Image (cartoon, rainbow, N blue to C red; front, side, top):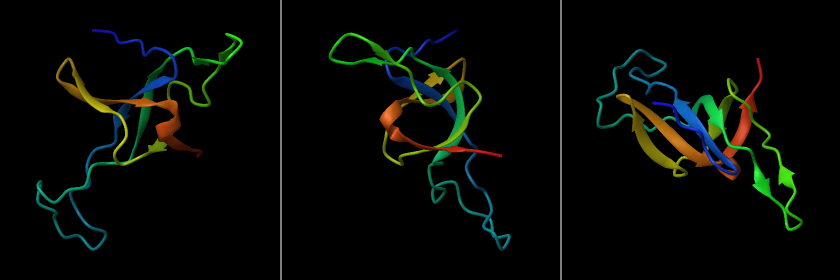
Length: 96
Protein backbone atom coordinates (compact mmCIF):
# COMPACT_ATOMS: atom_id res chain seq x y z
CA UNK A 1 0.00 0.00 0.00
CA UNK A 2 1.22 3.52 -0.77
CA UNK A 3 0.23 6.55 1.29
CA UNK A 4 0.52 10.15 0.07
CA UNK A 5 0.13 12.70 2.89
CA UNK A 6 -2.06 15.72 2.08
CA UNK A 7 -1.37 19.38 2.75
CA UNK A 8 1.27 19.99 5.39
CA UNK A 9 1.37 16.43 6.70
CA UNK A 10 4.49 14.28 6.99
CA UNK A 11 4.71 10.46 7.22
CA UNK A 12 7.56 9.33 9.50
CA UNK A 13 8.99 5.88 10.24
CA UNK A 14 9.87 6.10 13.96
CA UNK A 15 13.31 4.95 15.07
CA UNK A 16 13.31 1.69 17.05
CA UNK A 17 12.67 1.99 20.78
CA UNK A 18 15.74 1.95 23.00
CA UNK A 19 16.07 -1.49 24.60
CA UNK A 20 19.18 -0.74 26.69
CA UNK A 21 20.34 2.20 28.76
CA UNK A 22 23.71 3.85 28.14
CA UNK A 23 25.13 1.73 30.96
CA UNK A 24 23.92 -1.52 29.40
CA UNK A 25 20.81 -2.24 31.49
CA UNK A 26 17.84 -3.68 29.59
CA UNK A 27 14.60 -1.69 29.67
CA UNK A 28 11.32 -3.61 29.94
CA UNK A 29 8.94 -3.12 27.01
CA UNK A 30 6.43 -1.37 29.28
CA UNK A 31 8.99 1.20 30.40
CA UNK A 32 10.40 2.00 26.94
CA UNK A 33 9.65 5.54 25.86
CA UNK A 34 8.02 6.35 22.56
CA UNK A 35 10.80 7.45 20.18
CA UNK A 36 10.93 11.11 19.23
CA UNK A 37 13.03 10.75 16.12
CA UNK A 38 12.56 8.98 12.83
CA UNK A 39 12.95 9.08 9.06
CA UNK A 40 10.59 10.97 6.73
CA UNK A 41 8.96 8.51 4.33
CA UNK A 42 6.59 10.86 2.46
CA UNK A 43 5.49 14.51 2.56
CA UNK A 44 2.44 16.42 1.41
CA UNK A 45 2.52 19.26 -1.09
CA UNK A 46 2.42 21.93 1.63
CA UNK A 47 -0.30 24.15 3.04
CA UNK A 48 -2.02 27.02 1.30
CA UNK A 49 -1.65 30.63 2.44
CA UNK A 50 -4.50 33.17 2.44
CA UNK A 51 -3.86 33.96 -1.24
CA UNK A 52 -4.05 30.31 -2.26
CA UNK A 53 -0.30 29.98 -2.84
CA UNK A 54 1.31 26.69 -1.81
CA UNK A 55 3.92 26.95 0.97
CA UNK A 56 6.42 24.07 0.58
CA UNK A 57 7.48 22.02 3.59
CA UNK A 58 10.91 22.31 5.22
CA UNK A 59 11.42 18.52 5.25
CA UNK A 60 11.78 16.03 2.41
CA UNK A 61 11.74 12.27 1.99
CA UNK A 62 14.79 10.68 3.64
CA UNK A 63 15.37 13.42 6.25
CA UNK A 64 15.99 12.26 9.82
CA UNK A 65 13.91 14.41 12.16
CA UNK A 66 13.02 15.06 15.79
CA UNK A 67 9.29 15.45 16.45
CA UNK A 68 6.96 16.17 19.37
CA UNK A 69 6.34 13.41 21.87
CA UNK A 70 2.55 13.66 21.71
CA UNK A 71 2.07 14.86 18.13
CA UNK A 72 0.64 12.95 15.21
CA UNK A 73 -1.35 9.78 14.72
CA UNK A 74 0.03 6.27 14.90
CA UNK A 75 -0.87 4.25 11.81
CA UNK A 76 0.04 0.78 10.57
CA UNK A 77 0.80 0.15 6.87
CA UNK A 78 1.55 -3.38 5.67
CA UNK A 79 2.25 -4.43 9.27
CA UNK A 80 4.76 -1.62 9.96
CA UNK A 81 4.25 1.29 12.37
CA UNK A 82 4.36 4.88 11.11
CA UNK A 83 3.46 8.29 12.46
CA UNK A 84 1.44 10.86 10.49
CA UNK A 85 2.37 14.37 11.70
CA UNK A 86 1.64 17.96 10.78
CA UNK A 87 4.78 19.75 9.64
CA UNK A 88 4.55 21.99 12.74
CA UNK A 89 5.08 18.89 14.92
CA UNK A 90 8.51 18.34 13.34
CA UNK A 91 10.99 20.30 15.46
CA UNK A 92 14.34 19.73 13.75
CA UNK A 93 16.17 17.98 10.93
CA UNK A 94 19.16 15.90 12.04
CA UNK A 95 22.09 16.82 9.78
CA UNK A 96 25.01 14.44 9.46
